Length: 405
Image (cartoon, rainbow, N blue to C red; front, top):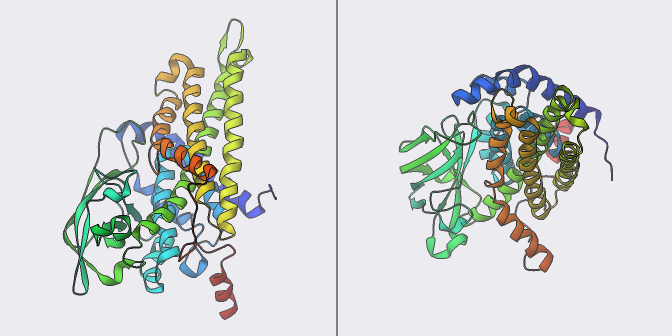
């Protein structure tokens, strides 16, 4: 076991933290009030090389390890959940899925421009009647010569109005239930595709979230991701990557709650002393610190399994479940520490609390993860080998590229 960060990882954290402190945090109160998604931040993420941080250099990524992605997500969510969510969806759910399941042609056409930040990727699984119950999908894909015709809709899709490419799941054979689900790469410019944002969200107001609609969308057979009927496996492996980034982001939210609370504990005085001197306030601070440290260990453990090219569904589920619970509790305590001021957006902790609720719902509710963990322990659940595994780090393809050059 090695608990030390590399010099490259330390430099990455410093760079992202400086970016967040200078370009996100000073604007977040206004952006949150307006429900504004600033695309200029995308340009800056591109310039900093953060949109393909764990994608091999062969595909125009930075070629860093998977725990480097966790560092990026931690620091971005310390600024606001919306920007971590954007990277989670673009990199974790879309680009890493293309890296794992895509053909070489698909990687060159879609993964390369996404890793460069020239195109934005998103992920379309959830539907109005299909959340945790993926087999209840209503979207269909019917083979028609060299194309598939997609019809249906998706909801609660992050980056719905700004993404260029979507990985979309649809039934190619509903009689086979989840074995009849397939995955497709859909482009925004394909005729029959449309999107609409959702307004009035409790939290993550700066994030672009909404619905996708497919009306006789003609998708070339070359855009089938994996094989017909592999969609469920692809979706679940994609969620391993998405949940990993969500868990890492939760660590960042706990950091933000702790930083703001400690600062306020030293500023605010009651009964003649700093409120940090009161034992029940100290208890909340201590619980935040414990949650931070435990969550971070769970996240980096899952990341190390990814680095080794091993299945990590169980470990990632545990990290996502616990880190998001700890973050939700830390945000609640941060508001309590701030008292009446915590109920106002004069301080960022009320935004932290609103933002902390969604991650305990999306990418597997905490109830689903509770059941998963129990089933692993009881021997009812077992992870079987996949046809395609996420490549281990260091990436062999990058070694080959260096040798070739």
